[in-house]
Length: 330
Image 1 (cartoon, rainbow, N blue to C red):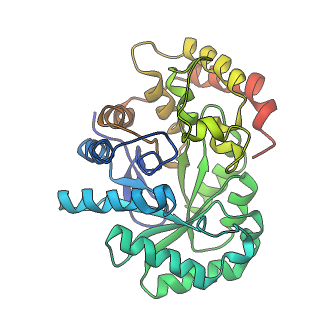
Image 2 (image 1 turned 135 degrees about the vertical axis):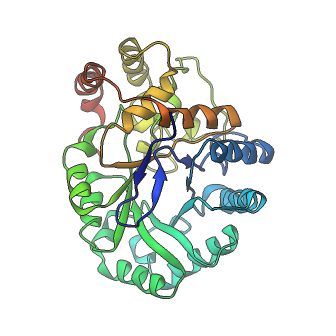
């Protein structure tokens, strides 16, 4: 089978259903050499991936610069490259989201990525108040008019923020956590995204590696890996690490899910295909630290749909074991 593709909202872009999340090749996932980072990205692109998601703070620009160099090496038709802006603010407060600040961040990303116009800029999980500040979205409209970006969207922590963001007419995409352990977006947000033709980027699809099925209570993480230092939200929203689920609870739920899945396909691939069972999801963006991971992720975009029995088992495990810990928080 060829890679599944989907429309990216109202942009006219046709993107691979499995993209490449470039957080890990930037930093805070343990050591990833530049050689491995470049090889992982090359492998994903070789497999038909044509959507890359990054941010200006991933390795303080390292991720963006690696993408620039790999795409220059390859030449030919460029994939869509989405980046993010806002988390360079210190302190990270709503008042910091001025046109001047955003333009400065965008200019830096233009330089890092080596382009004249950015494909897609996403506000990078800003404080909730930002979604109630029309002047921020007006500033982004001005930057589109100035030719510095083609489109803009948002990356959010909460369903509330996603629903508020898409009230602004020029928000073309929303990035949100969506996986077997975080199912709330399907209730209210996904139907509205479909109605308004807003693209949905599903991030943390493997719950920080939990849904590979390869972790245990003895798993160890490097000191600079957010899975070691951010479980309680010490550095950023704890929902970004293991989807906010207590590690022991998540391990038990993952084991229960494993017994319901087809045994001839890696669990990570099935978990990614599960994310794509929702029509609202435009692209899922797993990370990869080496070429083998990148190729395995891309293979999920060639799997057939999951059967309804499997889907219901996963829904029930979420309802009974996971929802009490996360459902109302995000």
